[in-house]
Image (tube, rainbow, N blue to C red):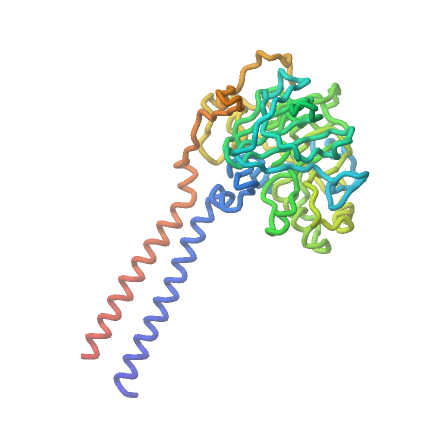
Length: 427
């Protein structure tokens, strides 16, 4: 063989080895970055109107597929109904003359604010709220049901939710209760305060939305109702709506997940996305109602017959999980894994909290939220804390990145030296 052909072959082999090592290095770098669970969730965190549905480290967005089963899971599931089945409480078209599900609307920062009064004013964020005249009401304008109204201000990323909402002839609104959240904050409502939901939780982040189906994944817990609940609540819930002390009834805030061994391969793509979310993120007891009813937003793209197939999933396919280990602070919805963002020291977690105080206007707000009415009459929520990156959580994924970087450098050095020797040998 000609000497130059031998040299060319040698150079080709060196180049091939270098390319292979480079690919391995790049793979290590990518794997290292994805090992940070907060980074992975942040890349796919659900948004509405350009706003996150709470930070990526929020409990709503936390994968609970590996959490331990709650010690009282069997009794909780039995009380909800072992042989009852899942029902998608949302869909396309109209039922009884109204859209099926809980609607919401996104408004710009220029949306005028209107006065709102509440029946439970001592547990509601005072108005005014940015409610447009065409805002959708759950169940329609003539509904006698929950009549939820949900508004997202895309400019401030604030979420406004009302229960039992009725427009008045003068442009103002009356409602049973109302709550306002900063979608960029993990702050919870004051303990024992209701919201537009009985559990004192926001509604919007727990809805199944068709846009998520179109994206191929749901990365958050879902909202669902049960017929009977206990007079207690679990973090992150803040309120209960029952007089029963039966410990086998589910408390508000209890989180359930679809068992990992449930075979969902026969379901449609849409339903597989929903059921996968129930395995990974679960669903939270948020209100009293029909058992196993999962909440979603109405959308003309839903296939109602297909959604009905979710009814093949019985209650016995679920289990309750114990997520107490994720609590960073009782007043924050942040899940363990990053630096606490609340200013108060972590409190000792009580598995099931029962309220002993009264719901009074003097109830103190949590340190994360201060309410005020500015000169323009708008309701402002100020988060007094900023999110910090945890050094401890960073250590979980920095090592693979450093190792990958070292491999890249060594690859370049070795390849360079071999190419140099090859050139010298040709001379």
